[in-house]
Image 1 (cartoon, rainbow, N blue to C red):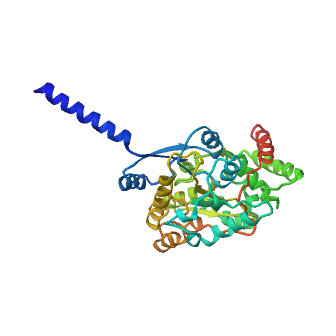
Image 2: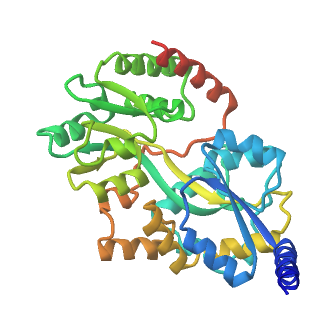
Image 3: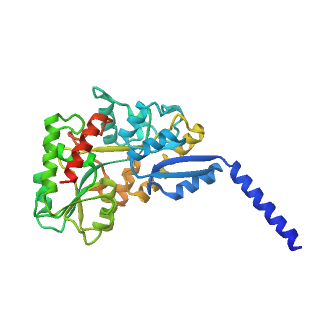
Length: 353
């Protein structure tokens, strides 16, 4: 009898494995810790599919993997999408297949920055290849309990990061750090002259020479909890939202000299195995309910204005960090291999100083 029962158990295991192997699968490639797992589970149940979420830690590391492998949906940033288009790796988005979100749903600031990107002299239409997922900017998270610090920021902008009287954390990123230096000097982060790039390197060398300056990355998520270990920290707005939720002593400031406004978006590679299922996933994730749940879970700003309105109305998160205000000097990073190489070479000199 035991042998017979064992045979039945093995039979059911084999049947289960066959069923799993025949179940449709969707491969999603995206940054880590950037989605509500409950939404993934709900999509799997609704469509009787298996979603494989594969994560990456930077756009730069993701692009070679996208070239070498097959994914159904990817979520890179704006400049990476531009590079993938130039490499002929993405399908154009078919707006007739988008059933949950349209351009009219997007926040006005997001539409402004995307229109500016599209209408630039060498413009790029991000919406032709991507469906916005989250967006935000780069700013300064600061300890509001430090007397006079808010006034210093309002007066000096990015230059406040060089004040030796304060403990400062720069995000250890060549792209973001040179953006700060170039904006502080009144230059474009996308089209700096050779002299402006040299001046930006000098600006960063001065900052790096301050013994109270540290260059870190995700450590900020621990360092700025109560009590904050730094007076000021360069952060992405979504991280500021989370940290201000956890530590009521923090404030967030975006200098008027301008900053990087970034957009992460769903895109579909040309070698996707199941394009129809990819659109189903995008449509599922861009509904009002899904985007509200996702933004509450992840703390980054939704592209949907109705979701933003709900976050404001319920006071779920601090408006100063959650609501992205696009200023006249703000820019979206562009794909430029020559500039990227020059910045990385200069950054190596700054970090070795």
